[in-house]
Image (cartoon, helix red, strand yellow):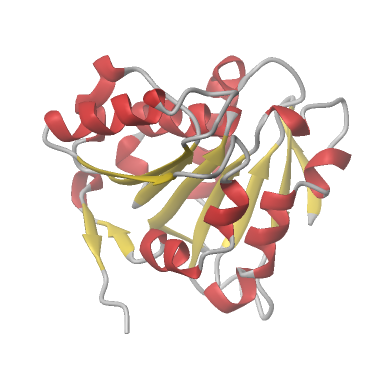
Length: 218
């Protein structure tokens, strides 16, 4: 993956084989966890979740964008992250109706936060072992969400995902929660190696006002 810099935010970017700037491509945005924080992007290059997403890129045909949080958490970089994605949305080869958001651990929190702030941008979202602010549940009303958590998680209490999914659904949204009874915090390998989750995530297009419409999957 190629490393680039936007303002003070580094990011990795990868394009599918045969990329043609005159065509339209889905954009998959991945927010990493605390383990990839550092002054350089070396840990992000080696991050297992990035590898899983990269391995499926050519078959699935998406552009992969992985911003790098060098310190603190995603909330501290949120304004810059929003500007970065806003720039990508305006690129002629990015399909605005097919922006997908996912992240694990600290990136799971970041996914919930970014999705609340810019829900109209995304076709669907998959936060993994994170949490959010239940009081913002109304912001997810038109965004399909599939959240994941390991019930043996000793780092982030699974109740956080449960509370968010419940709040979203009580507010009239569409949040599915998948729990892994025997998995600890690191449940994201199970998520990102399950092809059914890619089928689900990429099956949506973002119609007017951010309303997700599911495509048929053969």
